[in-house]
Image (tube, rainbow, N blue to C red; front, side, top):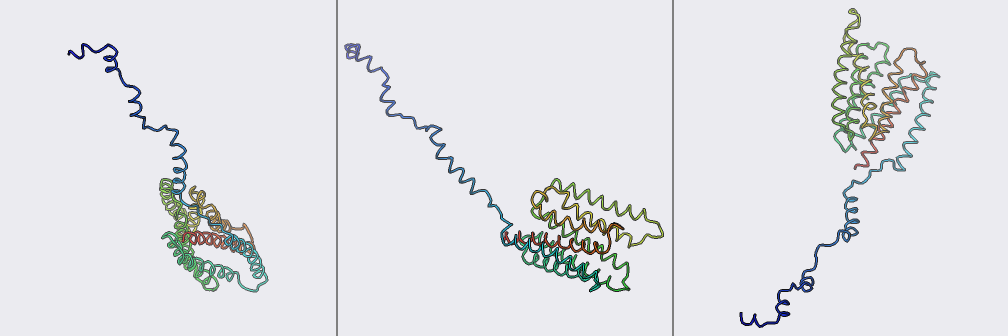
Length: 292
């Protein structure tokens, strides 16, 4: 108390004064400015985002483009020559079809071996079944004593196998769960109703299992077309196979209209339909090779 009483007023004021400069020197701000981290974090973030993105798959390689173009050009030329040979009575009309089926069977076997997904392999199995059923149907047509019932059953079995192959190829890496649920439910109900209506509208004296088989064969072709062309996911992800595979049932359905064409054009466009199927299968085979 005595010492504080005799201290001068300047010294006492200096003791209670806040040392602003020393505290500022010993307590610097540690929070960096927001703008100082932006140049450093920006390139790192962009590089990390680029690494996380999947690499783009290149399907149209130069070698595949050459093979695809040669198959298209030489195939159309061969169709014309084969049709003219049939017109000159050098062979029957079913033999060119059997040659196309042999090429398609080899393609489906190649997809069965080289396929990397379960959907593609299952579709290749259905494709082999389709080639076998259609081949047996053509061989029966070569015989004059072929049974109409056997031809109708083989035709229905072949078209159902084609529909199974299309379902597997179309849903492989092109799925839209909400759209597909409604689409397949409506097509199933509509297909069953169409077959039942065709059977009931047929005259009672003409109703038979052949009537049901013919209705199922026609319905399978329509569903095979709709599976590709009415699903937006197919057009968005696989426009090439969607267009090519859809042409096959469309050509078959158009040629089934009575009086729409003559025998020469009928044989030519049937071979063009097989060529479209072959080109679509080559496109899927190339995609499986890229995945490997």
